[in-house]
Amino acid sequence: MDKNELFRNIPKVDVLLERESMRALIDRYGRGLVTETVREQTGRLRETIREAEDAAAAAQAIDGLEQAVADALADLCAPKVRKVINATGTVLHTNLGRAPISRAQAAHLADIVTGYSNLEYDLENGRRGERYAHFEKLLCRLTGAEAAMVVNNNAAAVLLVLSTIASGGEVLTSRGELVEIGGKFRVPDVCQQSGATLREVGTTNKTHFSDYEEAITDQTKAILKVHTSNYRIVGFTESVEASELTELAHGRGIPVIEDLGSGVLVDLEKYGLSHEPTVQESIRAGIDVVCFSGDKLLGGPQAGIILGRKELIARMKRHPLTRALRVDKFTVTALELVLLEYLRPERIAETVPVLRMISEKSGAARARAEELAAMLRASCRRADISVGPCQSQVGGGSLPLERLESAAVIIDPWEMSADALEHAMLRLAVPIVPRVAEDKVLLDVRTIDREEFELTARMLGEVLG
Ligand SMILES: *Cc1c(COP(=O)(O)O)cnc(C)c1O
Image 1 (cartoon, rainbow, N blue to C red):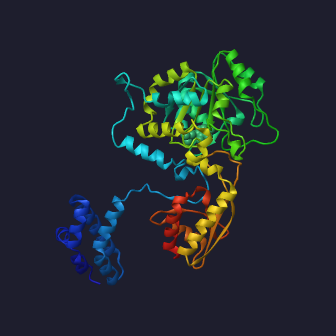
Image 2: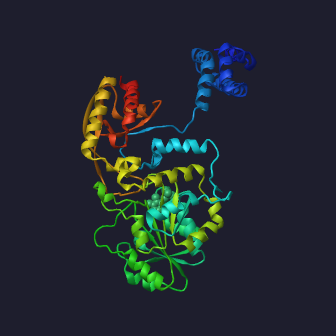
Image 3: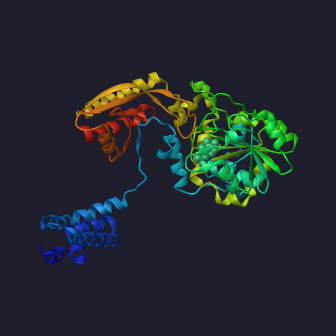
């Protein structure tokens, strides 16, 4: 094989750029980008020829050059953050973006962020305002707290709260509450970052009132309660009620901080789930500062909501870290919209997608699964399609023991394994993320909106049609 001959067959960059196909690409992507891509791809082609073992493969690579340039440009210019269909049934799937917001909320959000807004402008008095003002009153009304602010996420909230209140002193926390959340958030590490010293009290399974009482010294700047949101200690256990803890702490002039994790504003027992401590309960128990996530059970954007006593919140708003942790207009706008829905709690299971999904009864899920299965039978001829019961999870480190009775469309492909089908589904134009069990692919309908059924059937038809 004459490699020099092959190298000579690679078209020159400026010659290539004159070809019809390249002119079309220049119209679409601009000359600079196309020229750069042509250079990259001809460089790769040289590499391919250098390594090629037979002339046919090398010649084929040369013939494919124009297509390779087009493909590389299409890939480069396509957004990498894409819509996916969540067929896992896990409602707060951290890898899939946690809580979705509703279309109505998204439409309002688009309207605000495509222009200017009064994010930090007080329209009544025509002067600089505060970005928290938009929802501070609302949060206080919904929860009974005196004051509120919001930062980037709940991890940031815990850091800011501890940095403001406990830096340079000691924080008491029960050994049963030294939580690690996914993504390297560990209570002891955050505490250290804040400049406070963690003082562990009690044991893993039991912490008594007297453990806290005896640990308080003149170094103690706060007591921290952490909701063990993503695990449960069961059996021979004891912890101290928030109201007892606040009585003890306030008697000694110490504030109590609570990291609630999920932070629900409505009683989940209404939807047949087990009780999850609500924000209102914490405030009523006298907790001085409560913080929780915006995008877990609340169903809003990623945010860390901080509520509590006016004087403490005012100190946090002035803390230098606040500027580094502040929320932008996307978050402020979306959060206010979601919070407004909570003014009508009786409708919340319709207006907040997360609550709609976790409250769907198994019978309703079954009916929707039958509907999706019928659509799939029409679009996917090369698989057996049935409907069966399954269990979904809340996810996002919330309600770890809870299983929601749900329904799944079960796909048993004829010509490939379930793993191969899953692999193909992740590569669709709109990827579908399923569950795989016993060599079958399961689509748990709990997390698939009815509006996505047609798209799901069409996408799967591309693999199994
Ligand atoms: C999830 C969680 C956090 C972290 O919240 P993010 O909003 O993800 O930063 C902190 N503490 C607890 C108890 C949690 O459950």
